[in-house]
Image (cartoon, rainbow, N blue to C red; front, top):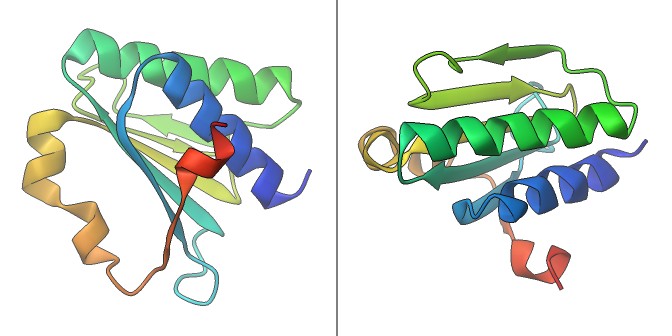
Length: 117
């Protein structure tokens, strides 16, 4: 599966659980970690966990190997490593604090609204 298809799956899965302010950063040429980062947040630990579980489930249903999933127990910042796509699901307060989009400010932001139509 191409990384763009995987990106679409993860964005749709996050949206299904009402993730807030979903953004995708195109990391190609910026970092060797992944092709894309998906960043979003939930308004409670319960919602963060639900978003993470949905992303994991949709990836597995699509035959994607979940390389690593961290932070689910605390549900404040869950990281899901899907190789070409890394998903960061924050609690709103923690997203505001870490400002990951600014850390990777040289990465182009992709229009996820187009994926959700």
